[in-house]
Image (cartoon, rainbow over all chains, first blue to last red; front, side):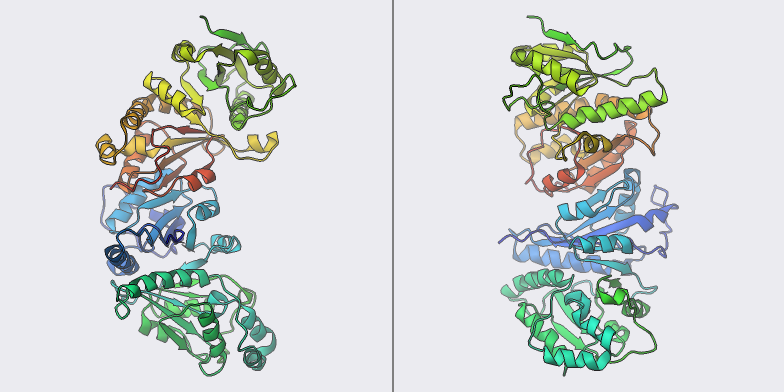
Length: 328
Length: 280
């Protein structure tokens, strides 16, 4: 079976990245172009791995995890080309290219594909690469990609990252407006918590509509099944998590039913009933966490998790108020 | 048999410092659809001529006495269509100074007589022949653009360089199982790279960086990122400023080419090779 190449593009890293201190022949002093570096990570027919991390080796965690996944996949399915593939996409002009490669080599990052658009919009290229996920630090580009139907999220790097596994890729997702559409979120924002509960109860058996990252979860699931087929159910190198503010006993049921109807599952589902997500994420230690609300993204980053904001849905117009954190 | 040379009197005769470009007629005009009219309709590579025209005009706007290009049309086996081609050139107001008509057997000789610095054609075997003769040559790429001159002129003139020619060592290609003809074309392309670069450099020279109607793109399909980096360094060494660069490392080039939409493309003999895994 041939899957379309799954591509994840990781975009721009935030500017607060320390420049490497050792010299590499090429001057690194002006690595302020790091602002413009976009990374493209994805699982495609070809192998590759994680988004570019900066400076410290501990931040290379996701690369190693993705590489570990690819290695296992190649071992088990040597004929298959379904692997993670990272493409680095940048607005920079090509004269930055050499410095870029030197830096990537310096950090031992496994990126082989590059797309330097010299100022043109990368959106056309995202489509040409059949991008499955686009990560960037530039929210505008992420919104453009989402508008074109490409799963995308804005990256936020924590000041101090918690250590992550180098052998198991862990991806955590929020539910509403990430995996699912924002329809329930809308009810909550417009009519409050009680109405939300009522609505979810009434519609328990109605499937939620899909959200921008449903496709990515689906692809992760496909790869997982390949491992299961070869007897690696317990030690699967990919693990997925649902981390939602919904309650297990009530509103969470609809979420689970929807996932099941889609033939998807996450390895773990955490229903926080409104509790803050940061501490939970710190325990899970995902390599990346997707959420549609900046409040949660910031919370996650504060606790050392790499978080990605999905600028989709009603939450963008009505940001979460910090004072009230009701359970759902 | 002497080539039949038609001079376009609408175009002023140019000094010898200009860049002589020989372009194949096929593609510029639509020669396949039979027509009753005196003129031919535009072909898929018509926009190339318009882009050249735009560059010339931009330059003339700055320094009126300088013209950049002398474009010659090479019409192989088209003696029957002479009148139509002539009329079409005038009809569209194209900056073409001469039109050479000849037979297939006279191709290389005719090409050499033009003293062209660059030969462009949609036909890859013609491009191969030119390369073998030591004439820098590139593929003319059909443009998938909307109808109407406006769209075709607005885009900058895009040149696509082969990162594989510039960065990939030949030994790796034989390992990859390329055929002899492919290897020969690759070598010929490599040999004429410096001259090709000189032509591009000459074009670049007349325009400021920010406002340049010329855009140089480098794409490497087979080579790994190391070889791509090496290609970028080679380009720099040849005095070429590259605007966009892509390293596909074995990914299929079709969709990316569609995005880039180059007007002309370096033919490295690997054009049809899309499934070869990346060499590293």
